[in-house]
Image 1 (cartoon, rainbow, N blue to C red):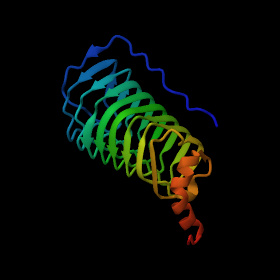
Image 2 (tube, rainbow, N blue to C red):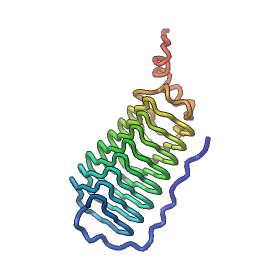
Image 3 (cartoon, rainbow, N blue to C red):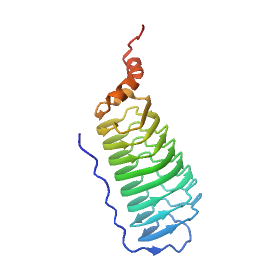
Image 4 (cartoon, one colour):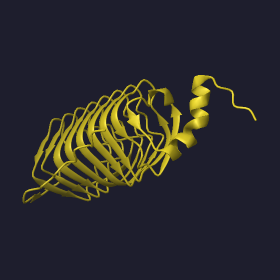
Length: 215
């Protein structure tokens, strides 16, 4: 089992963001962006490099194909944020409060999600490499068709996970505080779980294998 490589984000001296909203294909470099309301903003293809985004509202923000690099997102909040087919590399996401975030087809490399709660996270057909979910709640995350390599779940609550057609390699689930798999339990090959988790998953595994359990 290979451990995930965590990002080492070292932000330079940042320049205060001057406002003005997001723009398609916008270039945001070395900015301190605080408490901005990006509700409904169109930032398709935007690039964030060496940025700190703190307390920003992202409801229905449209950011497909965005690139978020060497950045820290603290307390982002919003429903329906569209980050489809985006790239997150060397990123820390802290205390997120998000719902229905679209990251399908995205590429996540050396990313840590620490704290917070994310409902209905869509990671279908995404590629996750060296990603850590730590101390957070993931309710009904969808990893359908995704590739997970060196991914760790530490002190997380995982509710109704969908692993349909996912491919797992060096995925460590032992640290999950709670593990509930709704679909795709057959895709756990390539993951490691604890004995206690195996016992909890036994009814689901028996059902998947067509085993009748009777006393």
